[in-house]
Every structure is written in C-alpha cells, then in structure tokens.
Image (cartoon, rainbow, N blue to C red):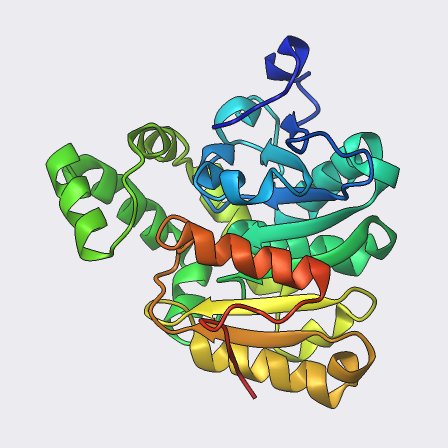
Length: 290
C-alpha cells in the first residue's frame, strides 16, 4: 500500500481513540479534499489497499481501524454503530482538511457512514455506501439472533483453509489478500458481532433512511449478494422525500458484484467514488435503481 505517513501515525493509538493512517495525495496537492474510508465487519483498513492506488493521486486519504478491529482492538465497549460513528467524527474533526471529509463505507462501515451523516452532517461533504441497507427477511432474523452469525464466523474460520480461501477468491473473481484474511480471523469477537448487528436492527429502517437528509448520499448494492430490492426502496424513499431532487441522493446496483466488491473490482469501485465526489457521470457498471 502506498503511504506517506510519518512514523508516529503508525504507533498504536491511545486506548480511547481509533487507529488512523493519513495518506497525502501524490503528487502533493494542498487543495485536495479528504476522503475517509470505513471498512466492513471483522475487516481492517487493509481492505482498501487495492482501491487506494486509484484514489491517492487525487485526494487526501484517511484510513481507520474501527473499534475492536485490528490496531483499534484495545478500545473498550460499546461497539455499536453510533459509538463507532462518534470515533470517526473525532478523526474527521482532528485530521481531515478543513475538518470535513467525503465518507466512504463498506458494509458495517456503510452503516457507520449513514449514522455519521445523520448525526454529524457538518463533517460530511458526501456519503458513498455499499452493502449497507436496512436488514429485512432472513438477514434481519439473523441479526436479531446474532449468536448464529457469531458461530457462523467462528466455524468458517475453523474450516476454511488457505487453499479453500484461494478457491473462493477465484470463484468470486476477488483479489487474494492473505494479510487481510489473517486480520479478519483475529477480528471475530462475540461482543462486536452482538453490538454491531443489534444496533443495525435498532437504528435502521427503509423509511428511516430519509433522516439522512442533509448529506448527499449514494447507496450501491452488489448485485450478486446484497439486498438489491431493499436498496431500490431506499432510493425510492430518497426520491419521494425530495432528497434526490434537492441533494442528488440515489441508489444503484452493480450487477456482477459480490458483497465485498472493493476487493473484486477495485478500479470500478474507486471510479464510482471519484465520480460521486466530483459530481461526474458514474461508471457504466452503476445501474440506477428507481
């Protein structure tokens, strides 16, 4: 991963703050805005290593390990979505240029982004989330019975060998990332899965997505694994409540994408971020959900 951070930024953070990594644009550009990238559940800032080369020439990047993950593993509970958003808000206020950032979130990081946009709109220049729609059907049942998910994570870590991991990456057309895989195994913790899923069920409904009404938001679903129809309904709520006309908030699907498609099509993922930030036309892979 390219980096221009100073050594002190690589030290473990104080117990009450999350780890962050600051990457300046290359070549340097004082006018470049800040993007902060928020990873998914059990992941880490390493999740963005394939996306970064497509973004670093244009933006100041902030990468974090969210609470209880990797270099932020020593932070005490709670590990709810709102408490994670509070930590991210502190990083933006202290380290983003002009104390504002375009916020990008994958999965759990997407829910943190949406909570941040609702509660700290003055810090958010825009929001780009993937795989972060209110849970319905079987996914909502699993979130309410999150012990099932915990043992699912635990069992998959037990039985998936390196060879099986390589095969799964090939089947899903994802880039292998052994270092990230080691991080995800270490980051499976009951308290985190309980708090994260519990707060997602409590905090997010389709109608409630209208509360993100002061920040321009893009929600995208990976067509192969995410809740495409729920994402469509989120876009409809934004349109009906005037957020599409007033801010430009919209919902999209990338049909060939899996859930963690930042590791599958990192160039397209980064292209979507750039287009959204710059208010340009999105890549052709982004299909509007009306």
